[in-house]
Length: 244
Image 1: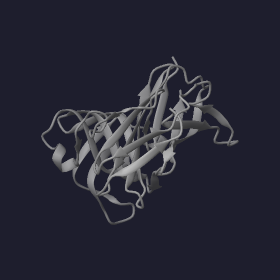
Image 2: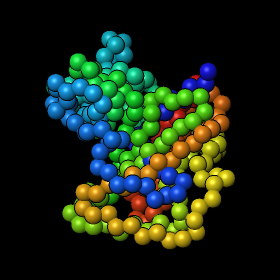
Image 3: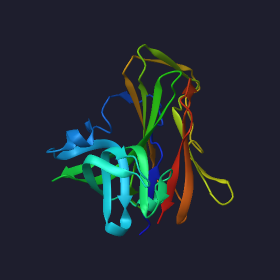
Image 4: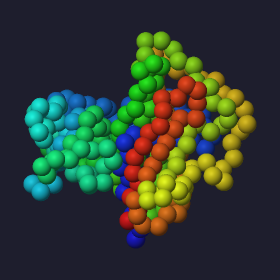
């Protein structure tokens, strides 16, 4: 059975129609710090400093990083399962320890352990205050992949977005050895050729879902990039797609 493991530096939700829906939760789950997650259970999203030492079987989302080399996990912390840290793009490594700043992981929290179902990282444009986040499952089924994109206005005033067509975002996969594009979500899709103007109020989030019934790739690792197809846009989100 072919399995797809995707760990992105940021995550994207898109829709073929491009209109999306508005919500503030992370993939429908409350966003918590490791301290807030203490004593909680159920489906949640936790944001913290990702720290892992695979040789000891330890994977944690920490409240803070403690200055040293390698950095240490600052308590309180949530134990995590379901992440292959060696395949997370953008992590640092030293002395058998992996770490990454400001990682959001969504999953099921039970007795202080988060069984991760999706990983999200964030990109923010300080000029506009727009935050662009992409949520991708750690593992998905044989052929289909759902990408989730969240655009949040973290400024103190409204931000006007202009989409030139019905497309709201783009996801592209490249062969890391050659740089050749091997997948583009918009390929063979048609979109309304009409300008859409959307105003995001301060603190408001626009959510898109991009579904792909068959990504159609051979086994291997692929570089992922994703963009919001609006003006202004927060920039490009990058990550990695691993097909098993």
